[in-house]
Amino acid sequence: MSRQTTGLSPRQEAVLRAVREWIVEYGEGPSVREIGARVGLSSTSSVAYQLGRLEELGLISRTGRRWQTCRLHP
Image (cartoon, rainbow, N blue to C red):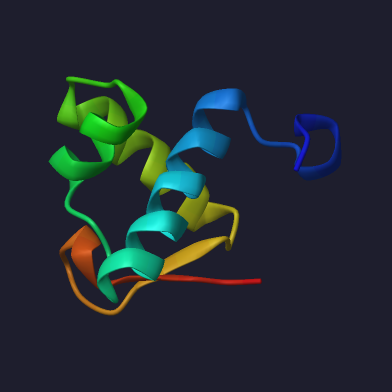
């Protein structure tokens, strides 16, 4: 998946990949801190911002307030 194809920044691609891999491994969405640990971001605010952008783009959605309830969209 290249940035030219998807229109995502490298950081957004990394966050999306981390969410996808976590869901495959554990069957539920990761926490903001777990995503940050996987992509090398220590700021939970930065991770939440990237997740919000992915949600705005329609690539993920939440069924509740927490990011652990996120779902991927094709």
